[in-house]
Every structure is written in structure tokens, then in C-alpha cells.
Length: 491
Image (cartoon, rainbow, N blue to C red; front, side, top):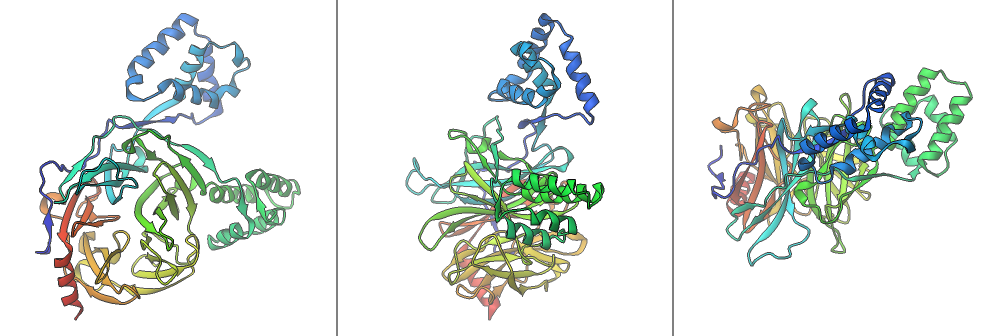
């Protein structure tokens, strides 16, 4: 570990660990239609006193674990109402019991709470002099290694002591709205980039208008299927990846009044069914002074990954969309916190091994880029990547990196990029800034320290980092001291 490194030792800051008690509700879907029918029929045969008793017991066991469990059960009942011939004849209690039989709890942090990033909170009201409220984001992983995004808030005082705010015992998933229109040419371009623009796709494409809705896409698919030109298997394969792409663009809404620690972005589309991984949040200030929080993340469906972008102003309303272009491949894209020479700038790892700098006039499309950094030190012999968005200082952009070395040991390093031309490396530490200590080596994935984003506050670089894919810590280092070391290395 570098001699520059020091740990924040304020006793009010505890290691941030996963809490198995934090659960959300998910719809339960049996594997077969027949199984669903059998469950419904069993509940329909119960007499009313038995229904009321079972519902009462269910609510007694689960109501205190969720803010409005009856609303959840009612919603999940609606999903299976089509299996019932005369739903209007059912009592409200029977409907809720049916809903309970098609509902399950999911512990989102049962395996890990790791790979954090941190940004300044959008609103700083009710802060005392010298205090700053921040938001930590985490990758929470539960049963089946499914990852989601969760948040914690904290207050940092003028001495950079960190006070985590109380964490709510409740969690809530948002309302989801799919994009209502799609651009035909952009949709085609993304399919081509994915290597999925087949003859079937071309036929469907011919039926689409310039801007089309999901309903119009369904009509185009129906028309091509009805032509009997293609086999049923070819049609089914095409429909899967078309819907996969369409469902990757959506919006989610959390109600105002819901605490930041209650919000969870759980995998919602087919392309991220196995995880929403490693969100790198950044506070982006546009040329007109407007502020938007962006985060890149990796959508994973168990076989393929897809780079995605989150956009929000308030952490209540999030827009999710695909990132496109040859530079938007692989994992670990990190957006600069402002435009450079009038263009968006992004650190990428297109080839899975080296770091690239990409520019674009459109934040969703990344076509050009150049390699700026390659593995060269012993602790990064296998590959390097970024550890979040670059941080601006008067001397240059601080870019935290991660290196993978022998035995797949992960360490955090740092480089200094030129302010006007970030392709120029001004300085680069030869030794890791942060490496796993002996007590940090053990975990779900051993020998790893990793971060998805840091901030500079009160003259210090504050680094939230994960240890061995299990839980998270926070570290800090004086910025001036770090810059001095980097500039010496650059000479």
C-alpha cells in the first residue's frame, strides 16, 4: 500500500455492510401455466372463513416488513386475474390471498454490498456550515447473483468526518414506463452494431415508420410473421432480440417523500435480467450551468452484456437508455464531469484490457476514440480499467484506475491527465494507491479492492471502495500531496 494512503478513522463511520433483512417484493411465476391454474383453483375452493384466517396470518407475518403490503398483493393479483372465470364474485380477502400466493420476498443484499460511487447530493438544505450531504450508490447482490443499485446518504463535515444517515428498514421498487417511441434508423444502427440485423429484421424494418411505437413494432412483427416467408424459429429468435433492445430504454419513478435509502433500481428489462452492475455516478455540469447526474452501468442477462446510461436530476426520476457505437463496448465506461472543448468525453475499455478516451457530440453515441493507457506496472499485468469518472483539479484530471495482477489481485491506482487534452498522461503512480490489506483479502471474490467513483471535498480525495466483492469502506488522501507525487512521476 502506498505511503500516501491514510484511512478515515472517525469512529462514527462504520464499514458499510450488506443487510440481509432488507427485502423487496417480486411477482412469483410458476414454471408452467398448469401450475398457475392449480394454485388458483386450490384457493378458489377454500371457504371464506379459511380465506380470511390465512390472509390475517400472512399479513401478521409480512405487513411490518413492507410499507404497503396490501397494495403489493393487490397488484400481483391483477397479474393472474385472467385465470379466474368470474373475478367480480371474489371477496377482497380472497383476491389478496391469491396475490400473496403469487408474491415472494427477495433479499437484495444477502450476498454483497459493494462497488460504491459517491456524488454530492442534489439539495444541500438544512446543512450546517461546513457540512455537505452526499449520496453513495452501491451494487447490491442477492440470491442467484442478481445485482441491483441501492443508495445511502451521509453528511461529511469540514474535517471530512463521515456520518452515515439512518437507513430505512423498507425498500421500494419504482413505477416503470417504457419508451413510447423509437427512432427507426437508430434502432437499426444498434441492431447492426449488435450483429443482429438479419433478413427477418430487415423485413420488419420495412414496415416501420420513422418514429414508431411498441404497438407499431408489434404490428410489423405480426405482418412479417403472417407472410410465411421465414420459419417460426427464425421469427422467434428475431423477436427476442428486438424486444430485448426495445425494453432496454425506459424510465422509472420513485415517489417524492421516499427516503433515498428506500430506493432500489432492480433489473427490469430482459437484457439486465441477471444484473444491473457497477453504476458509475457522476455529477455533470453542462456548459449552461445545468446539472445532471449520469451513471454508466453494465446490463447483464446471463450471457451478454450491454452498456447502459442512467440520467437523473433528483434521484426520483431516472431515465435508462442504451449506449451505442464501437467505443461503447465492454464494461467500465466513465463520463467526464463536464464537456471538453464542447464535446462529451468518456474513459472506456473497449478491448477489455486498455484504457481509451472517446469524444462525442451526443452522449448516447460513441464512435471515435484512442488508447491512452495500457498495463505497464507489475500490479496491473493482466488488465487495467477505470474506478469512476475523472476528477478535476487545477493541475489536471485525476483518474482512478484499477489494475489486475498475478492471482487476479485487484488494486487501485491513479493517473493525472492534462486538463485541456486528457489524452496526455502527465503523471502515473508506479505503485498502487490502494491495495487489499490482509483483513480485506477474504470475501465473495478474494484479493480485490474496487471503486466506481470518488469525490474531492475539503482538499481531500474521498474514495469509497469495495473489499473482495463483499462490503464497502471509505478512504481518503490529501489532494495536494497526491498531485505532488504524480507530478514528480511525470517528469
